[in-house]
Image 1 (cartoon, rainbow, N blue to C red):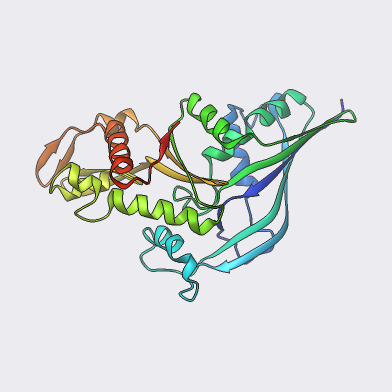
Image 2 (cartoon, rainbow, N blue to C red):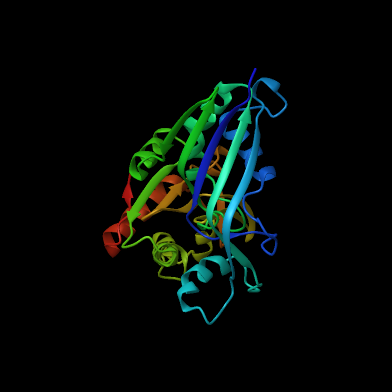
Length: 297
């Protein structure tokens, strides 16, 4: 039985903040990619019937110091990054002209399933540090499939069609906004404005919704937390940002049953919350008030 090959060319959408950014070829790690892709596909890594190998190669890299006061265009990107990095540590991000993933398997059905799902996988998964805030984003530019000398080539899906299919998968609610251009700076300006209006300060939409119970805003985007007697218990992120070419995308995930059914205590007052409904209501109001509308797929 001959080995089949699937080649996937990735387009890097946003800078990836890598823990080995000083090393050549510091990009998506196979040890990070493969387990996440296995889970997404429903594969058991120990099952030989669905086994495959993946090779990652890069072409041309740009490394830039992240915290650089002299680069004014980085301001919005730094704001999003440093909300979770108050010490303002020095990090470097990497940008690649081309990243190729080569998948190999003796079972062509395995590669066919990867081919059909790889674009959705990269919409729903970023890599490196600060993934939920839009960093480390990639999309599929093209792919080619080889089997017994036959070769099939194809370009990636239309972005809106791709988002509609992601919504249909039921993994999250999708909002998107068409940007004025393709620049990374334009994307970070858009999501910084949204993040600030949603969460920060006494005039944020979270604070307004719950009057002066300001502690409650930590229970929402982008990091959900339970607040019990002023002790914060962190949970998974409810809102994640993506850049897909000329679109800024917000992915809103449903909260877990455990979190949705929990009681919140804020300043001694017990509250019942429906976070999923609240977030949709807040995004709708934000769109209406600001005219910076995000369209729901």
